[in-house]
Image (cartoon, rainbow, N blue to C red; front, side, top):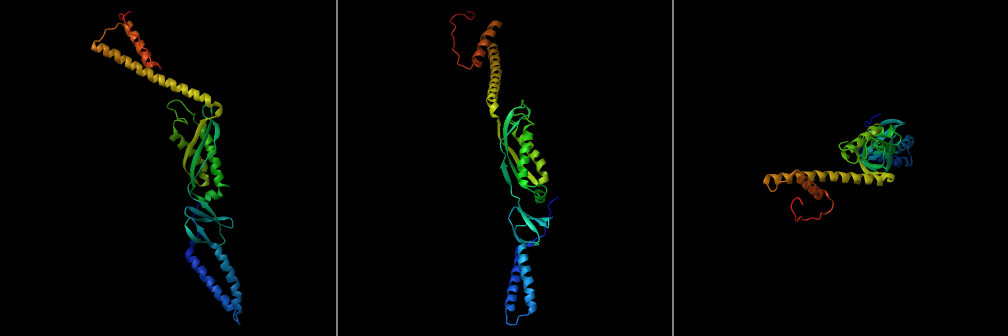
Length: 288
């Protein structure tokens, strides 16, 4: 079932005709109250007045970014999106559906990531109705359907990635844009049958579950320390090589292999140590 335009006319001309009919009925009532009224006029006034009241039921308002879904004795009769005062068949029943952009934040879900670690995750979903017929007739409650299916898609997406994967591989923590795009696609696939378009889906909360949070924090700290030490060692080796090359090129001092090894060892201790070094002055010769 897809949306199509329903029958309606501009409300102001219809209202003018409606008021003119009211004036005619009023004049008819005045004529019927004369001393010698016409029997035919009295008989015509009753159905005319009933018809006038019934036609008044056909007036309705459409707000900006709103659709009125109309039914004719249970059959879908179309949707009116033209804003302002409108008039349609009085037998039509109408249901307003908001076409405005809406958003909600899911609850914090506890799921296992791709590595089996329990995590907490939540997301913000921005959506709107694009097909009023599908939203009203294809699902029971489209707003509740959006919430439940979004949380289901979020749970499925979280299980497809690791919280903090290996370098270069997509993970929940490091590849935010790719993860958000994947989440939006997962939600859209579930909501397409409800006439809903997902504008944006973005993770709003991501953390390890409380029972493993402390252990994972220590692991992250250890990984950071190891990475920092690797960078320090690489820089220190480069500086030592540059120092030896410059001493040799400028002829400052000639060192045998044993002295070179000692000098390299001392420089690495100074450059890689996490504490300030205390210099020792050698008052003897180079080899004592």
